[in-house]
Image (tube, rainbow, N blue to C red):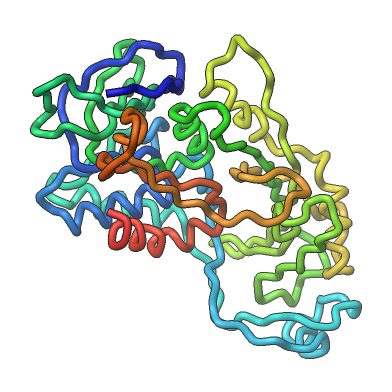
Amino acid sequence: MQKRNFLAVIAGLTIAKKPEMAVDHLIIGAGAIGLAIAQRLAYKFPNRSTYLVERNDRVGEETSPNSSKSPVAPTRFISGDEARELEPDLSHEITAAIESPETGILDSHSFFESLEKLIDESNGAGVIALGTKVVRVDPYVPEPGESIDGSTSGWAVQFVTGDSDEPDSILARTLINASGLSSTLVLNALLPPEKRLAAFFSRGSYASYRGPGTSSINRLIYPVPEQGTSHGHASLGTHLTVDMEGNIKFGPDAEWLQPPEDPALDGQEIHDFWKQHLVPSDSRLDQMYQAVLTYLPGIHRDGLSSDYVGIRPKLVGQGHGFQDFIIRPDWSTDFYRAQADTGSGRMISLMGIESPGLTSSLAIAEMIVEELI
């Protein structure tokens, strides 16, 4: 048996630890995707064990915390005049639009609570562990004749809960990496340097609005992204959305962030640099105002105020075009056998899944559970 060299450390831990028990499915990250997958696994496989671990004290805290999102619905092409009949505040410069008559908004927090409740009511098939941080992942390499709860392949996952300094280790027969902003970090900790995936981060700011120029608004309004601008495919442009209370918000814009280059920081600390950028800033308001004027010329600058910001995980950098979600399968046996044969010890990594992942989370979970597991 030949063991490939790899760096498995995610956050400040350097010693591999033998698993103490085995679970059938372990999911890292209790955002929309992780919750949806855990719920579907728990109900499809009631006699198997599904563990969902989340480093925060609540579910849905990182990539998907916004209060409302708009799912995709059937559309029709209309002229600019037809668009202004529906929304009289629109600019006369608009010559065409696409209408989606059935588009609505989703209360993400209620959605998370529903999935969490379903998992809790799965008669023990699904378990959510909050405040639990994964610090190391290794392919499980058994000694001759060794097994963990009858398993000889899978992933040795180490994690710490709460303020504990001592990690626990369990064997995941199937590991699902749905850790959002950290998803590339988990996979890269296992890959040799030449095969690691680049990670980029785009900060999106939202502004609330109270003022003239929107009195007739009854719909969400999305400008078409201009590919010659700096944001390119980084966002859909600064659009108009409405929260669950009916308040108008504009956003998100797109601001690329640069991770620190500090050798004293471990992988997770570097990857978490984005947390310092979650404070809304009025410095973005002038640019957002100019962007909104292109389709709603009647708004006033003094009606805008900073509201909240979010961070999007990106797999390509500024100016490098569009990159869709990546759903990547790997096998633990591929990481330590000289030649891969029949793979076992499945890992599925879901990467680059930003805001559209919320409204497509149930469909993604269906594909993962029904087609890949």
